[in-house]
Figure 1 (tube, rainbow, N blue to C red):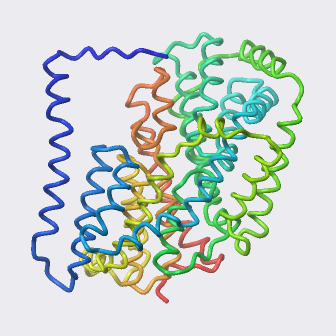
Figure 2 (figure 1 turned 120 degrees about the vertical axis):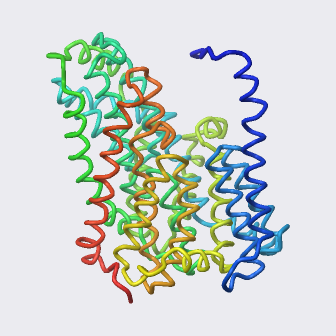
Length: 480
């Protein structure tokens, strides 16, 4: 394990620890007290005001990292009954949303892929097959991470492939910070994972969380596993092309050969040996699960299929519980449950509609501008805070705006969830960026400048897709 030495003066370290968190905590509590005590114009109910106060408190705690994300979510579940927004039975029942169990099942399936070594084998074989020149190797890493993020959490993909990329750049003798090709390799790792992560419901928890909030508010979620991907894939394909072009433009290839890397990949593949029966069985279960999601997800339920797949894995002893505990991020499960509860409370209390009415003002008669504003705000926020927290913030507000304008409310799920996954510029925006930055090859400005350009292009591409392509699928930003 790497040891990081804090070289700041002792007085600054002590001051930061003594003042930083208490000040942030006090800021959240103060904001809660102000919102819950002041008089608001309009028809905001008492329950709506308390829901808004809890909402503001949680957003501050999420944004400033006062408490771990999952603890803040659990706090929200407890505060809603205590403040009279809803009963305890209502609040805690929302935690049992099917999206939570879908995410849990997807995490366990991904854990089996990693534990068995199948995901690593696929990565090495892909790179060995296609990475025969510097540009081909760079493109292989970029596309590999994107494709794997179609079926696994983008964070897990970036973490899993990071050691492979680190070994390749070390064998090639690339110098940290100074090597343009080294920077490009780690940026390809991060951006490929990020772009691929929005393609399906498996790339992260943002899409299931948005669909869960949509279902709690409207009582229906019209998207299937396949239809969601149909909405997202045009953005993914365009941004893959743009992303690779931006990487080559900012960080030109400055080496002539990758023969040393080819030898390393060949050696690592040979060490894995023949494909084990366990890997074959897990691959079969995963393929069958995805096929069932695509073909019968809407009728059988995505969560039911995911849990059934997990039961099959345990029935045939392809995974042990202690192995699941090592790979599944249980804190994220808690975070999603609390976020779903908070989003439902903000909507049901009328607070979301009240906020939406105050925000949209005179431009409420233009749904295209509403979508541009929501997607743009979501993109900017996700560069600075957890994308799951951004979904929890923007979905209730977006649904309130959609209802006020007369838009189809279902369209807000991808309008929020897809831009929430497109953080390219800052290490805090997504763990994939943080993992790439931790390599030591990238300076902060190496991420920020091209990353902000990527984010802006992604926002433009997304809005063009909404207005040109989405109507072909049956959804239009125009009023009903």
